[in-house]
Image (cartoon, rainbow, N blue to C red):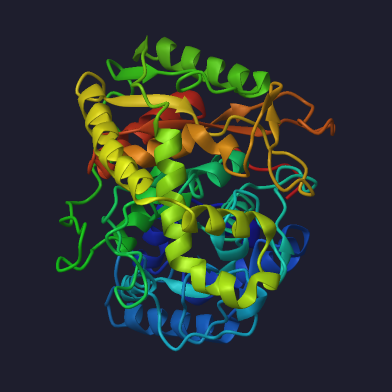
Length: 481
Protein backbone atom coordinates (compact mmCIF):
# COMPACT_ATOMS: atom_id res chain seq x y z
CA UNK A 1 0.00 0.00 0.00
CA UNK A 2 1.00 3.62 -0.49
CA UNK A 3 1.01 5.91 2.52
CA UNK A 4 -2.31 7.40 1.41
CA UNK A 5 -3.84 3.93 1.01
CA UNK A 6 -2.83 3.09 4.57
CA UNK A 7 -4.17 6.35 5.92
CA UNK A 8 -7.65 5.68 4.49
CA UNK A 9 -7.69 2.00 5.49
CA UNK A 10 -10.39 1.31 8.12
CA UNK A 11 -9.04 1.37 11.67
CA UNK A 12 -10.41 -2.12 12.33
CA UNK A 13 -8.37 -3.43 9.38
CA UNK A 14 -5.26 -1.55 10.52
CA UNK A 15 -5.68 -3.16 13.94
CA UNK A 16 -5.80 -6.60 12.29
CA UNK A 17 -2.69 -5.88 10.23
CA UNK A 18 -0.84 -4.76 13.36
CA UNK A 19 -1.93 -7.84 15.34
CA UNK A 20 -0.79 -10.16 12.54
CA UNK A 21 2.49 -8.23 12.20
CA UNK A 22 1.82 -7.64 8.50
CA UNK A 23 2.26 -3.98 9.43
CA UNK A 24 4.43 -2.39 12.10
CA UNK A 25 3.42 0.50 14.30
CA UNK A 26 6.41 2.46 13.04
CA UNK A 27 5.41 1.95 9.40
CA UNK A 28 1.90 3.14 10.18
CA UNK A 29 3.17 6.15 12.12
CA UNK A 30 5.46 7.09 9.22
CA UNK A 31 2.51 6.94 6.80
CA UNK A 32 0.39 9.26 8.93
CA UNK A 33 3.16 11.74 9.73
CA UNK A 34 4.02 11.92 6.02
CA UNK A 35 0.39 12.65 5.15
CA UNK A 36 0.08 15.21 7.97
CA UNK A 37 3.08 17.10 6.62
CA UNK A 38 1.61 17.16 3.10
CA UNK A 39 -2.07 17.82 3.81
CA UNK A 40 -2.39 19.48 7.22
CA UNK A 41 -1.00 22.89 6.12
CA UNK A 42 -4.17 23.30 4.03
CA UNK A 43 -6.46 22.43 6.94
CA UNK A 44 -4.77 23.39 10.22
CA UNK A 45 -6.49 20.43 11.88
CA UNK A 46 -3.50 19.14 13.86
CA UNK A 47 -1.88 22.03 15.69
CA UNK A 48 0.87 20.31 17.68
CA UNK A 49 2.94 17.30 16.60
CA UNK A 50 4.82 15.19 19.13
CA UNK A 51 6.86 13.07 16.74
CA UNK A 52 9.63 12.05 19.13
CA UNK A 53 7.16 10.84 21.74
CA UNK A 54 5.13 9.04 19.09
CA UNK A 55 8.20 7.31 17.66
CA UNK A 56 9.09 6.02 21.12
CA UNK A 57 5.56 4.69 21.63
CA UNK A 58 5.51 3.03 18.21
CA UNK A 59 8.87 1.40 18.88
CA UNK A 60 7.58 0.06 22.20
CA UNK A 61 4.50 -1.32 20.44
CA UNK A 62 6.65 -3.10 17.87
CA UNK A 63 8.93 -4.57 20.53
CA UNK A 64 5.92 -5.89 22.38
CA UNK A 65 4.50 -7.37 19.18
CA UNK A 66 7.82 -9.12 18.51
CA UNK A 67 7.40 -10.84 21.90
CA UNK A 68 3.86 -11.84 20.99
CA UNK A 69 2.37 -9.30 23.39
CA UNK A 70 -0.56 -6.99 22.53
CA UNK A 71 -0.67 -3.68 24.37
CA UNK A 72 -4.46 -3.51 24.06
CA UNK A 73 -7.26 -3.01 21.53
CA UNK A 74 -5.60 0.11 20.08
CA UNK A 75 -2.10 -1.40 19.85
CA UNK A 76 0.02 0.79 17.55
CA UNK A 77 -2.85 2.93 16.22
CA UNK A 78 -2.06 6.69 16.06
CA UNK A 79 -4.35 9.31 17.55
CA UNK A 80 -4.12 13.05 18.18
CA UNK A 81 -5.92 14.42 21.23
CA UNK A 82 -8.30 17.39 21.28
CA UNK A 83 -6.41 20.45 22.54
CA UNK A 84 -8.82 20.86 25.46
CA UNK A 85 -7.42 17.76 27.11
CA UNK A 86 -4.19 17.39 29.09
CA UNK A 87 -1.40 15.31 27.57
CA UNK A 88 1.76 14.72 29.57
CA UNK A 89 4.76 16.39 27.93
CA UNK A 90 2.72 17.70 24.96
CA UNK A 91 1.63 21.33 24.71
CA UNK A 92 -2.03 21.82 25.64
CA UNK A 93 -3.41 25.32 25.06
CA UNK A 94 -7.21 24.91 25.44
CA UNK A 95 -7.31 27.27 22.45
CA UNK A 96 -6.48 30.21 24.73
CA UNK A 97 -3.54 32.64 24.66
CA UNK A 98 -3.50 32.29 28.45
CA UNK A 99 -2.12 28.77 27.95
CA UNK A 100 -0.20 29.16 24.69
CA UNK A 101 2.94 27.59 26.17
CA UNK A 102 1.31 25.25 28.69
CA UNK A 103 2.77 21.72 28.87
CA UNK A 104 0.95 19.48 31.40
CA UNK A 105 2.84 17.10 33.68
CA UNK A 106 0.13 14.44 33.58
CA UNK A 107 -2.44 12.96 31.21
CA UNK A 108 -6.15 13.44 31.67
CA UNK A 109 -7.85 10.21 32.79
CA UNK A 110 -9.03 9.09 29.38
CA UNK A 111 -5.72 9.94 27.68
CA UNK A 112 -4.01 7.69 30.21
CA UNK A 113 -6.56 5.02 29.31
CA UNK A 114 -5.79 5.41 25.60
CA UNK A 115 -2.10 4.88 26.30
CA UNK A 116 -2.93 1.77 28.32
CA UNK A 117 -5.00 0.51 25.38
CA UNK A 118 -1.91 0.80 23.16
CA UNK A 119 -2.67 3.99 21.21
CA UNK A 120 0.22 6.11 19.92
CA UNK A 121 -0.31 9.79 20.82
CA UNK A 122 1.03 11.87 17.94
CA UNK A 123 -0.20 15.38 18.78
CA UNK A 124 -3.19 17.67 19.36
CA UNK A 125 -6.21 18.68 17.26
CA UNK A 126 -7.53 22.22 17.04
CA UNK A 127 -10.48 23.56 19.05
CA UNK A 128 -12.11 26.95 19.68
CA UNK A 129 -11.18 28.90 22.80
CA UNK A 130 -11.98 26.68 25.80
CA UNK A 131 -14.13 24.60 23.46
CA UNK A 132 -16.84 27.28 23.31
CA UNK A 133 -18.63 27.38 19.96
CA UNK A 134 -19.22 25.14 16.95
CA UNK A 135 -16.73 26.89 14.69
CA UNK A 136 -13.07 25.92 15.18
CA UNK A 137 -10.78 28.94 15.50
CA UNK A 138 -8.73 30.59 18.24
CA UNK A 139 -6.09 33.25 18.80
CA UNK A 140 -3.31 30.71 19.27
CA UNK A 141 -3.53 28.67 16.06
CA UNK A 142 -6.16 30.32 13.87
CA UNK A 143 -8.97 28.54 12.04
CA UNK A 144 -9.34 24.94 10.93
CA UNK A 145 -10.74 24.37 7.44
CA UNK A 146 -13.09 21.75 6.07
CA UNK A 147 -11.40 19.14 3.82
CA UNK A 148 -14.51 19.08 1.61
CA UNK A 149 -13.95 22.76 0.77
CA UNK A 150 -11.15 24.62 2.50
CA UNK A 151 -13.08 27.89 2.27
CA UNK A 152 -15.61 26.49 4.72
CA UNK A 153 -15.70 25.56 8.41
CA UNK A 154 -15.50 21.95 9.62
CA UNK A 155 -17.77 22.87 12.54
CA UNK A 156 -16.70 22.42 16.13
CA UNK A 157 -15.70 22.37 18.79
CA UNK A 158 -14.05 19.09 17.78
CA UNK A 159 -13.47 20.54 14.32
CA UNK A 160 -9.78 19.74 14.21
CA UNK A 161 -10.51 16.13 15.10
CA UNK A 162 -13.27 15.66 12.51
CA UNK A 163 -11.32 17.41 9.74
CA UNK A 164 -8.24 15.30 10.48
CA UNK A 165 -10.19 12.03 10.35
CA UNK A 166 -12.06 13.00 7.17
CA UNK A 167 -8.78 13.97 5.48
CA UNK A 168 -6.98 10.75 6.41
CA UNK A 169 -4.59 12.42 8.87
CA UNK A 170 -5.78 10.07 11.64
CA UNK A 171 -7.65 6.75 11.70
CA UNK A 172 -9.94 8.15 14.40
CA UNK A 173 -9.97 10.86 17.08
CA UNK A 174 -11.46 11.82 20.40
CA UNK A 175 -13.97 14.63 20.73
CA UNK A 176 -16.01 16.23 23.49
CA UNK A 177 -19.67 17.19 23.20
CA UNK A 178 -21.78 19.62 25.21
CA UNK A 179 -24.10 21.41 22.78
CA UNK A 180 -23.04 19.53 19.65
CA UNK A 181 -19.25 19.43 19.62
CA UNK A 182 -18.80 15.85 18.44
CA UNK A 183 -21.94 15.57 16.33
CA UNK A 184 -21.72 18.96 14.56
CA UNK A 185 -18.22 18.53 13.05
CA UNK A 186 -18.89 14.86 12.29
CA UNK A 187 -21.87 15.92 10.17
CA UNK A 188 -19.98 18.77 8.49
CA UNK A 189 -17.03 16.53 7.59
CA UNK A 190 -18.98 13.36 6.63
CA UNK A 191 -17.69 11.13 9.42
CA UNK A 192 -19.27 9.31 12.38
CA UNK A 193 -19.39 11.02 15.78
CA UNK A 194 -20.87 9.55 18.96
CA UNK A 195 -22.13 11.55 21.94
CA UNK A 196 -21.88 8.93 24.66
CA UNK A 197 -24.11 8.30 27.65
CA UNK A 198 -22.83 10.46 30.55
CA UNK A 199 -20.34 8.53 32.67
CA UNK A 200 -19.40 5.96 30.03
CA UNK A 201 -16.00 7.65 29.64
CA UNK A 202 -14.28 9.47 32.49
CA UNK A 203 -13.85 12.95 31.06
CA UNK A 204 -13.13 14.98 34.19
CA UNK A 205 -10.79 15.19 37.13
CA UNK A 206 -12.50 15.51 40.55
CA UNK A 207 -9.78 17.94 41.62
CA UNK A 208 -10.84 20.58 39.09
CA UNK A 209 -13.96 19.49 37.17
CA UNK A 210 -17.63 19.06 38.03
CA UNK A 211 -17.82 15.27 37.77
CA UNK A 212 -21.54 15.39 38.62
CA UNK A 213 -22.34 17.35 35.43
CA UNK A 214 -23.86 15.16 32.66
CA UNK A 215 -23.84 17.85 29.94
CA UNK A 216 -20.28 17.48 28.62
CA UNK A 217 -19.14 14.03 27.53
CA UNK A 218 -16.32 12.49 25.49
CA UNK A 219 -16.94 10.41 22.39
CA UNK A 220 -15.20 8.87 19.38
CA UNK A 221 -14.98 10.35 15.87
CA UNK A 222 -14.23 7.93 13.02
CA UNK A 223 -14.96 7.17 9.38
CA UNK A 224 -17.34 4.32 10.26
CA UNK A 225 -19.39 3.04 13.19
CA UNK A 226 -17.08 0.02 13.44
CA UNK A 227 -14.02 2.25 13.77
CA UNK A 228 -15.86 4.39 16.35
CA UNK A 229 -16.63 1.25 18.34
CA UNK A 230 -12.96 0.25 18.26
CA UNK A 231 -11.89 3.63 19.65
CA UNK A 232 -14.68 3.51 22.23
CA UNK A 233 -13.25 0.22 23.51
CA UNK A 234 -10.05 2.07 24.41
CA UNK A 235 -11.79 5.15 25.84
CA UNK A 236 -14.30 3.49 28.14
CA UNK A 237 -13.67 1.88 31.51
CA UNK A 238 -14.64 4.51 34.06
CA UNK A 239 -13.59 4.61 37.70
CA UNK A 240 -16.58 2.95 39.45
CA UNK A 241 -15.98 5.18 42.47
CA UNK A 242 -16.92 8.33 40.54
CA UNK A 243 -20.40 9.82 40.04
CA UNK A 244 -22.25 8.80 36.84
CA UNK A 245 -19.87 5.85 36.30
CA UNK A 246 -21.32 3.08 34.14
CA UNK A 247 -20.38 -0.61 34.10
CA UNK A 248 -18.04 -1.74 31.34
CA UNK A 249 -20.01 -3.47 28.59
CA UNK A 250 -19.20 -6.55 26.55
CA UNK A 251 -17.53 -6.22 23.16
CA UNK A 252 -19.36 -4.32 20.42
CA UNK A 253 -21.83 -6.71 18.78
CA UNK A 254 -21.14 -5.48 15.25
CA UNK A 255 -23.72 -4.29 12.70
CA UNK A 256 -27.30 -5.49 13.05
CA UNK A 257 -27.85 -8.92 11.55
CA UNK A 258 -30.11 -8.47 8.55
CA UNK A 259 -29.35 -4.76 8.18
CA UNK A 260 -32.21 -2.31 8.81
CA UNK A 261 -35.00 -4.75 7.91
CA UNK A 262 -37.79 -4.18 10.46
CA UNK A 263 -35.88 -1.48 12.37
CA UNK A 264 -38.35 0.91 14.04
CA UNK A 265 -37.23 4.47 13.28
CA UNK A 266 -39.04 7.55 14.57
CA UNK A 267 -38.34 10.27 12.00
CA UNK A 268 -38.36 13.98 12.78
CA UNK A 269 -37.62 16.40 9.96
CA UNK A 270 -37.10 19.39 12.29
CA UNK A 271 -37.27 18.23 15.94
CA UNK A 272 -40.17 20.41 16.93
CA UNK A 273 -40.33 23.07 14.22
CA UNK A 274 -36.68 24.12 14.07
CA UNK A 275 -35.59 25.73 10.78
CA UNK A 276 -33.59 23.42 8.52
CA UNK A 277 -31.94 24.56 5.29
CA UNK A 278 -33.65 23.10 2.20
CA UNK A 279 -30.38 21.58 0.94
CA UNK A 280 -29.93 19.66 4.19
CA UNK A 281 -33.60 18.60 4.24
CA UNK A 282 -33.23 17.28 0.69
CA UNK A 283 -30.25 15.09 1.63
CA UNK A 284 -32.10 13.68 4.62
CA UNK A 285 -35.17 13.01 2.49
CA UNK A 286 -33.03 10.84 0.20
CA UNK A 287 -31.62 9.06 3.25
CA UNK A 288 -35.12 8.29 4.53
CA UNK A 289 -36.12 6.88 1.17
CA UNK A 290 -33.06 4.61 1.15
CA UNK A 291 -33.93 3.30 4.62
CA UNK A 292 -37.54 2.62 3.65
CA UNK A 293 -36.39 0.86 0.47
CA UNK A 294 -34.15 -1.33 2.66
CA UNK A 295 -37.05 -2.46 4.83
CA UNK A 296 -36.90 -0.10 7.83
CA UNK A 297 -40.21 0.90 9.42
CA UNK A 298 -39.98 4.71 9.37
CA UNK A 299 -42.68 6.71 11.17
CA UNK A 300 -43.10 10.48 11.55
CA UNK A 301 -42.84 10.97 15.33
CA UNK A 302 -40.92 13.04 17.85
CA UNK A 303 -40.95 13.71 21.60
CA UNK A 304 -41.89 17.17 22.88
CA UNK A 305 -38.55 18.88 23.53
CA UNK A 306 -39.06 22.61 22.92
CA UNK A 307 -38.63 23.48 26.61
CA UNK A 308 -35.17 21.88 26.49
CA UNK A 309 -33.83 25.10 24.94
CA UNK A 310 -34.19 27.14 28.12
CA UNK A 311 -33.04 24.22 30.28
CA UNK A 312 -29.91 23.87 28.19
CA UNK A 313 -29.16 27.60 28.26
CA UNK A 314 -29.47 27.76 32.05
CA UNK A 315 -27.45 24.63 32.81
CA UNK A 316 -24.74 25.55 30.30
CA UNK A 317 -24.61 29.04 31.84
CA UNK A 318 -24.15 27.54 35.30
CA UNK A 319 -21.32 25.37 33.97
CA UNK A 320 -19.62 28.31 32.24
CA UNK A 321 -19.86 30.52 35.32
CA UNK A 322 -18.44 27.82 37.54
CA UNK A 323 -15.58 26.95 35.23
CA UNK A 324 -14.59 30.39 33.90
CA UNK A 325 -15.98 32.96 36.32
CA UNK A 326 -12.59 33.54 37.92
CA UNK A 327 -10.90 33.76 34.51
CA UNK A 328 -13.38 36.42 33.44
CA UNK A 329 -12.52 38.48 36.53
CA UNK A 330 -8.77 38.26 35.97
CA UNK A 331 -8.33 38.10 32.16
CA UNK A 332 -11.44 39.52 30.56
CA UNK A 333 -9.37 41.18 27.81
CA UNK A 334 -8.10 37.79 26.59
CA UNK A 335 -11.52 36.11 26.22
CA UNK A 336 -13.69 36.23 23.10
CA UNK A 337 -16.95 38.17 23.32
CA UNK A 338 -19.27 35.19 22.92
CA UNK A 339 -17.58 33.37 25.80
CA UNK A 340 -17.78 36.49 27.98
CA UNK A 341 -21.50 36.71 27.26
CA UNK A 342 -22.06 33.09 28.26
CA UNK A 343 -20.14 33.47 31.53
CA UNK A 344 -21.98 36.66 32.45
CA UNK A 345 -25.32 35.02 31.66
CA UNK A 346 -24.45 32.19 34.04
CA UNK A 347 -23.33 34.54 36.79
CA UNK A 348 -26.63 36.42 36.53
CA UNK A 349 -28.92 33.40 36.92
CA UNK A 350 -31.21 33.19 39.94
CA UNK A 351 -31.66 30.21 42.23
CA UNK A 352 -35.22 29.83 40.95
CA UNK A 353 -34.04 29.63 37.34
CA UNK A 354 -31.45 26.99 38.17
CA UNK A 355 -33.82 24.91 40.32
CA UNK A 356 -36.46 25.04 37.61
CA UNK A 357 -34.02 23.87 34.93
CA UNK A 358 -32.85 20.95 37.06
CA UNK A 359 -36.44 19.83 37.69
CA UNK A 360 -37.41 20.11 34.01
CA UNK A 361 -34.29 18.23 32.90
CA UNK A 362 -35.54 15.16 34.78
CA UNK A 363 -38.96 15.49 33.14
CA UNK A 364 -37.34 15.72 29.69
CA UNK A 365 -35.17 12.67 30.39
CA UNK A 366 -38.26 10.67 31.33
CA UNK A 367 -40.10 11.89 28.24
CA UNK A 368 -37.33 10.68 25.91
CA UNK A 369 -37.00 7.37 27.77
CA UNK A 370 -40.73 6.71 27.40
CA UNK A 371 -40.72 7.77 23.74
CA UNK A 372 -37.95 5.31 22.83
CA UNK A 373 -39.94 2.51 24.39
CA UNK A 374 -41.86 2.41 21.09
CA UNK A 375 -38.91 2.83 18.70
CA UNK A 376 -35.38 1.53 18.24
CA UNK A 377 -34.01 4.97 17.42
CA UNK A 378 -35.04 8.58 16.81
CA UNK A 379 -33.66 10.12 13.59
CA UNK A 380 -33.26 13.89 13.14
CA UNK A 381 -31.01 16.32 11.26
CA UNK A 382 -27.65 16.56 13.01
CA UNK A 383 -26.99 20.13 11.89
CA UNK A 384 -29.66 22.45 10.53
CA UNK A 385 -27.27 24.02 7.99
CA UNK A 386 -24.53 22.96 5.59
CA UNK A 387 -20.90 24.01 6.20
CA UNK A 388 -20.50 27.79 5.86
CA UNK A 389 -17.56 30.17 5.18
CA UNK A 390 -14.77 29.83 7.69
CA UNK A 391 -14.68 33.58 8.29
CA UNK A 392 -18.22 33.52 9.72
CA UNK A 393 -18.18 32.92 13.49
CA UNK A 394 -21.67 31.48 13.78
CA UNK A 395 -24.99 31.13 11.96
CA UNK A 396 -27.19 34.17 12.58
CA UNK A 397 -30.18 33.16 10.43
CA UNK A 398 -31.69 29.93 9.05
CA UNK A 399 -34.42 30.21 6.41
CA UNK A 400 -34.98 33.80 7.55
CA UNK A 401 -35.35 32.78 11.21
CA UNK A 402 -32.95 34.80 13.37
CA UNK A 403 -30.62 32.86 15.67
CA UNK A 404 -30.10 35.04 18.73
CA UNK A 405 -26.90 33.52 20.15
CA UNK A 406 -23.88 31.61 18.89
CA UNK A 407 -25.35 28.29 20.05
CA UNK A 408 -29.00 28.69 18.99
CA UNK A 409 -28.35 27.17 15.55
CA UNK A 410 -27.32 23.89 17.22
CA UNK A 411 -30.69 23.06 18.76
CA UNK A 412 -31.25 19.78 16.94
CA UNK A 413 -28.27 18.60 18.99
CA UNK A 414 -28.58 20.64 22.22
CA UNK A 415 -32.16 19.50 22.75
CA UNK A 416 -30.88 15.91 22.69
CA UNK A 417 -28.05 16.80 25.10
CA UNK A 418 -30.65 17.73 27.73
CA UNK A 419 -32.24 14.28 27.46
CA UNK A 420 -28.86 12.68 28.42
CA UNK A 421 -29.44 9.93 25.85
CA UNK A 422 -26.61 8.83 23.54
CA UNK A 423 -26.67 10.18 19.99
CA UNK A 424 -24.56 9.52 16.92
CA UNK A 425 -24.19 11.47 13.69
CA UNK A 426 -23.76 9.36 10.56
CA UNK A 427 -23.04 10.65 7.04
CA UNK A 428 -26.33 11.09 5.16
CA UNK A 429 -25.03 12.28 1.78
CA UNK A 430 -23.96 15.45 -0.01
CA UNK A 431 -25.88 18.62 -0.81
CA UNK A 432 -26.02 20.32 -4.20
CA UNK A 433 -23.40 22.62 -5.61
CA UNK A 434 -23.74 25.93 -3.74
CA UNK A 435 -22.92 26.63 -0.09
CA UNK A 436 -25.01 28.91 2.17
CA UNK A 437 -22.44 31.62 1.54
CA UNK A 438 -23.00 31.45 -2.21
CA UNK A 439 -19.67 29.71 -2.89
CA UNK A 440 -19.67 27.15 -5.70
CA UNK A 441 -18.83 23.71 -4.33
CA UNK A 442 -18.95 20.10 -5.42
CA UNK A 443 -21.39 19.00 -2.74
CA UNK A 444 -21.25 19.42 1.03
CA UNK A 445 -21.78 16.85 3.79
CA UNK A 446 -24.99 16.57 5.80
CA UNK A 447 -25.46 14.30 8.81
CA UNK A 448 -28.29 12.19 10.20
CA UNK A 449 -28.53 12.17 14.01
CA UNK A 450 -29.65 8.92 15.63
CA UNK A 451 -30.72 8.97 19.29
CA UNK A 452 -30.66 5.68 21.19
CA UNK A 453 -31.80 4.34 24.53
CA UNK A 454 -30.02 5.51 27.66
CA UNK A 455 -26.85 3.51 28.28
CA UNK A 456 -27.22 1.52 25.05
CA UNK A 457 -24.23 3.05 23.25
CA UNK A 458 -23.05 -0.24 21.74
CA UNK A 459 -26.51 -1.02 20.41
CA UNK A 460 -26.73 2.50 18.97
CA UNK A 461 -23.44 1.99 17.11
CA UNK A 462 -24.77 -1.31 15.76
CA UNK A 463 -27.85 0.53 14.46
CA UNK A 464 -25.63 3.29 13.06
CA UNK A 465 -23.53 0.74 11.19
CA UNK A 466 -26.61 -0.81 9.60
CA UNK A 467 -28.14 2.55 8.71
CA UNK A 468 -24.82 3.72 7.29
CA UNK A 469 -24.69 0.67 5.03
CA UNK A 470 -28.20 1.41 3.78
CA UNK A 471 -27.54 5.11 3.11
CA UNK A 472 -23.85 5.35 2.15
CA UNK A 473 -22.22 1.89 1.86
CA UNK A 474 -18.80 3.38 1.06
CA UNK A 475 -17.43 6.20 3.28
CA UNK A 476 -17.09 9.36 1.22
CA UNK A 477 -13.61 10.82 0.75
CA UNK A 478 -13.11 14.57 0.24
CA UNK A 479 -12.05 15.30 -3.33
CA UNK A 480 -8.56 16.65 -3.88
CA UNK A 481 -7.35 15.87 -0.33
